Image 1 (cartoon, rainbow, N blue to C red):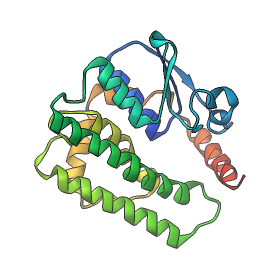
Image 2 (image 1 turned 30 degrees about the horizontal axis):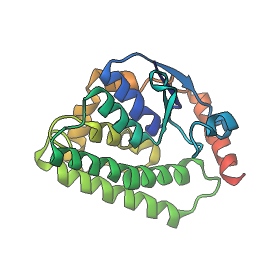
Image 3 (image 1 turned 135 degrees about the horizontal axis):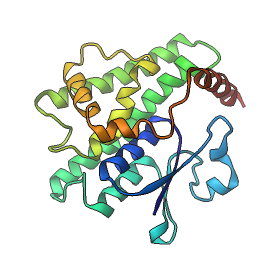
Image 4 (image 1 turned 135 degrees about the vertical axis):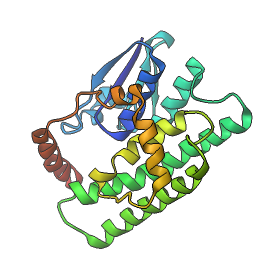
Amino acid sequence: MLELLTSETPNGWKITIMLEELGVPYSVRPISLTNREQKEDWYVALNPNGRIPTLVDHDEGDFAVFESGAILVYLAEKYGRFLSTDVKDRSRTLQWVMWQMSGLGPMMGQATVFNRYFPEKLPAVIDRYVRESQRLFGVLDAHLADKDYIVGDYSIADIACYPWVRGHEWAQVDMDGFDNLKRWYDRVGERPAVQRGLLIPKPPTAEEMAEKTINQGKNILS
């Protein structure tokens, strides 16, 4: 049995989407970021970086995998889906997963932090991360000009990128003008497994989001 330790973030949703696409049995243990559960000793023993998500494969001797990109590759290889066996297409897919992990995710994450959670408004900092996020949107938009999906068929590249693009409104990163990106975004968002994955764990209420925003601001300064 697969056990996913996760929270309601884009990196967490990558894995719930993947698991729903695969249709394999798994259990979920929600991790409270507000309570900093991901920094507790028992969790860090599974994930040295103290972040979510973490996947534990109990059928493989409780093998733990951390880093969302690595989890996507592990699951794709374990079940033989969403990662081409063609050498070039496999490489292209992994290139875009790495691109998301090193660029799109961190830049959108920082835009979110400084727009939503940081207790001070720092216009120069916000502008830097918003502009870089939009530059990356442009990179993907240009790539998708003649493609339905990022690399050939639907793959872990699409799964990796989608939750971060989806967060553009929360991060206050304007997606206007990126028509190819929007077309791809709508196509991926129509998939039933994607819609199911975004509901795991249960989305927070408006009151919980307000509390989370306050606590995240406090955590940044602690």
